[in-house]
Length: 129
Length: 377
Image (cartoon, rainbow over all chains, first blue to last red; front, top):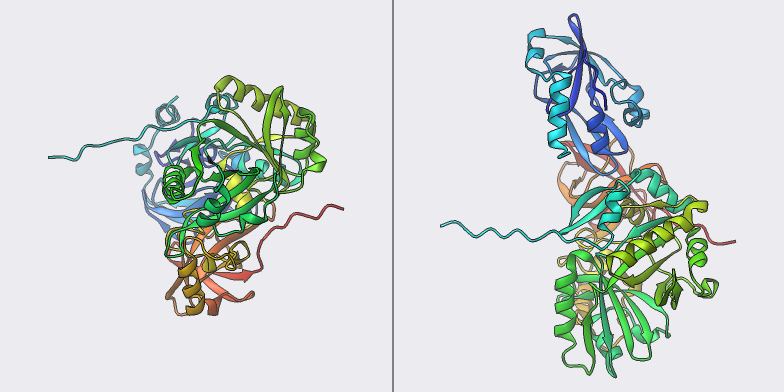
């Protein structure tokens, strides 16, 4: 698995790609692989306030329900509605299938998140191999 | 003082290594280390509906009952009428507590004049064996726990018959659904081959010796024979969605020690005209008292997936029932569930709410089974 170096990662397996004062959020390849076939996503509406570390939606595979945790605080500006009808796209390309775009409240919050290298190390330990 | 922690050892079937070699995702299922999926639940599910899939179901238990009073003993502990079984025939049945609730659901196979094989669930193996043994003491028969003697492989789907026929000299065309035969399979003599399963499809379950080498060899030969039919190894994930689409009950979900036969809607397997069986009296009284809840099929109307244990609400937001099993249905491509609701909400077409993350999400009662396999032309 390769994790883009310009993304930051959470221990709950979300990625966030900052771009100036805004950022794009999704779940990692590791997350989609552990979930299995994804069949449902529930995402917030534009305008929703996210706060770092709090749930902002959920993703469900055939087998399991998993909460989504905001990697950073901010206001939702855009939602990838395509995932409502094609949630399986997350399995095919997790790092390309963004879920929400937000206007960052405090770009400094991102400093506490994991780098690609740290995240890779983290999932290697969590996966036990 | 602190209580002594006892961690029960995780149990493995003889095919554990084979599953890992195939890259299966493994999970703890009732204390068993079992494959939940290999290539993906949806692909595995669809393979069984349209072609063939194979499952390791060795964690299921097997109890042999034999002797002059074997039939009487079976009749005493089960709700279906085993006296109707011809030699080589099998039937779905259940064992009840005196209060009419479930010990487990079972399949009873008549193997000989006075010989039966009861197949039981993995999670209830020890409880079931003890129940059978204790309640058959008064009968002239032997009760043996053969659970560890067999590796049980299920070959399921419309092409299952083609796969198994390649590996056996037994004439499978002569074996009807819910009948068994014996034959040589993969060079092993006198193997029990049952046309049974838990997927809602045609299929077979074969009972081979449980040593690791034999088990892995047969498993691989079945996979090889199935290649031309697109066979996939299938895990417990697909097994669950397949049985849910077909409304086959699962112990601990649709049936349990607090649910009775009438509530579960298993009336057609319960032969009250039998003079007696454990639970008979209670069921008679339950029937007279009327039903307080019924098992129904739900299809989600609004976006959302009902999951096991979610609450069913009425239009005022009060809890009136609960979901026993719920999932995305990979073949029907719908979100479906089984749930217990009061009789007044059980009619097809009734709308109820399923509580999903503190929201009442609309669902509708639909006819069951959700999926019924097409009749052979």
